[in-house]
Amino acid sequence: MLTELTTVRLKSNEEMSLIRVAAPEPQWAERLVDLIAHKGEPWVGYLRLVLQQQLPGLEVYVYVGLLAGEIAGNIMTLEATAPRLGILGNVLTAPAHRRKGICMALMEALTNDFRGRGGRGMTLGTGYGSPAYHIYHSFGFRSVAGTGRMIWQVEPGFLQDYFAPAPTQVRDIAWPDWAFLDLLYTMEEGDFVRNVRFAQYGLSAYEGLFPQLHEMTTQPPGQSKVLEKDSGEVVGHVTLLPDPRWRDSVLLLDVFIHPNSYPAAGELLAAIEFPANTKIQAYAETTAQEKIATLKDRGLHEEAVLLSQLTVGDEQRDVVVLAAGR
Image (tube, rainbow, N blue to C red):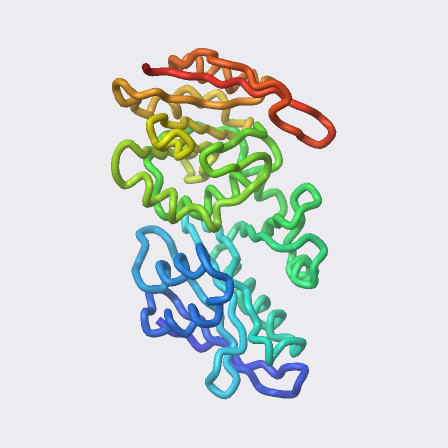
């Protein structure tokens, strides 16, 4: 569905029409994909995916600037709705139309629209200190730990409320978790070894990974669960996926939980079924004693210690390998 938002006058004195494309909108898919074709995968594939079909529970909006009917720039959001949390991505201004204020105009339309829909927070990734970084900063996005990962708290205290301790439940992953997991893995707090299968160490992201994760868990042996507060916030995540390093004969068990919700870690791990006669491995830095204890409670045992396996800042950390099964 197309919605005409407004018309703005650019620095070049040209008038640009701003429209919002709400997915699915297959007729616009190829026009928008052509604009970002140079970025390659996974970005082209996931843009085509979200524009061509309705993904249950996920809302997708593309804010487009048109000059004489041609796309001069666009920005996309992927949004979970309960609570409303977004990822900002696929930001592009056509080379012939840069330095005209197009990105600023699109950002103003996007942020006003998101706030009007009850949006509470949004994540993005960019180059720290880049021109784009400063544009996002001017609209309320703030760096996480001095990196290009940024979070916009629409209302002060959003993150504190989001991750506050509360009763939780476990469920299978769903499309809205695209936004929820991007926020969870962006947080600085928590274990450094988060997901070995997707090479997520320390604060990271899920913007480009989630479609792959979703596909991998649609058939055995892949499994993925989230830990969800009663009010909808996702505060923990576990995956059991084949490890390609060993020709998929070993399954990798990866779990990451926000520290405020670690008391429910056992509940989350218990929801994963261990296939019979299959070796399962998990990894944790030796400083993550709570994680190691929880994995042992689930039936894993220490198999090895990899000395000085990780460098975190100026610190060398050992990594424990835990195993279950054959």
